[in-house]
Image (tube, rainbow, N blue to C red; front, side, top):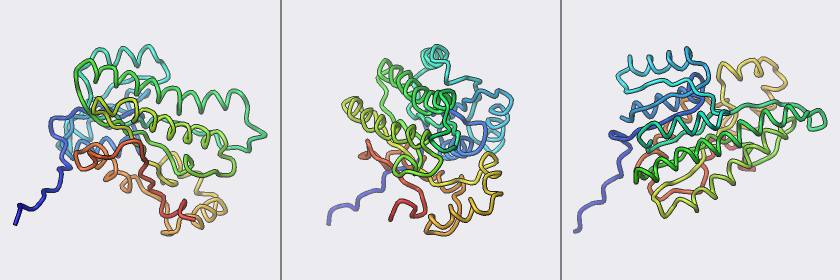
Length: 255
């Protein structure tokens, strides 16, 4: 009998990770998950105090982390950030925003706010990260936080859907451009996740009920529901995955 195959490792020791929008909510949870798996994590956000507190919490839990204040909308600053550091092997492109309203009420300022952060900034963060990876001869994993709304439509979500569908297309094209260099690109597409930022929306019982009616597992998502996915996509366990999406939606998109 030949030897049994060995499960690829989910451990991330020896790898450097960067997570944008990491001061709270989903970004903080994903950074914590990567650190728990052994990665050295750099947490990035505009709010310096918040992201510093997040890094301190990871350090207190025994992880390796540092914090950097960076506005990912500042493309020049993003380029300098990656150029001035050794290559990261893991990027979590998480920074994003939303302005929910009917499409007929969307303003140009709304459009620019959502598309500039969710698409333009995500693109140039990935580009700067990849350029450094290529310069250092490093392989790795790009992980973009999308949404179930990058796979379906939704009322009052025209801008958000536009940005998240764009992110899915970008990630697939990144995967094709970078496969020969050993760099993978995938998305995580969650349903509605209950965080301090989204909690006020769920105070509206009609909205909460409408959301729960679409989530077949009958509950809102939590940040913990996404933590295993980011470790999986960052690790050797997903070595043959690129150009695809992990849809973590409780069954929303199943029908």
